[in-house]
Amino acid sequence: MKTFCVIPAYNEAKNIATVVSQVKPLLDQVVVVDDDSADRTYELAKASGAVALRHLINRGQGAALRTGTAYCLNQGAEIIVHFDADGQFLAQDLKKVLAPLLAGEAAVVFGSRFLNQGGPDMPWLKKYLIMPLARQVNKIFFNINLTDPQSGFRALTARAAETISWRQDRMAHCSEIMFAVKKNNFKVKEVPIQVVYHSFGQSFADGLKILKDLFIAWLSS
Image (tube, one colour):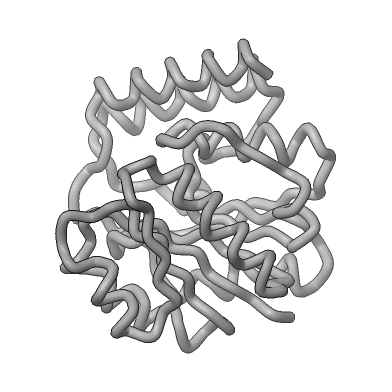
């Protein structure tokens, strides 16, 4: 099946060439969406053999994923993978994420950091407060019962990608995508993935912003 990978990127000049080189041999095409970076992310992605798209203003990761997903569908992709640009995801986990789609066992697959023994290596506050709270918000307000409430490593069939839509441009798009998948009754599977943290991502304040965006998304749904 024709498999494309969308990598949203913002100021990832130090990582993007390595990420593209690791992912590219495993898929049919890699699409990097540069979200108005101030560095050489776009040029380096293009030089690494990826299709490079560029936003003229910084719109957020959710918006970059929309741009990349639409491009992949227009190019005839049968499976679309969403993958991060910061080097935290492992290319070797692509096989696990793709397997249920290739076998026809699911239409959408989410990678989960929490299915690995011991769970992800992240700050205590984020692991034991922000993430469990986000998981409960997903469950109570969106009827989503997945182990990883903010999974950015996912794969979708073309039909699923064409059907679902999300409006959140920033980090809350993760839960909105899950909600759209649930709402459209697509068969879902979670698989364990490993995340190698070079930094610990969102602060507690950022976590509260995600929760605020989720409540706004719920009120407008």
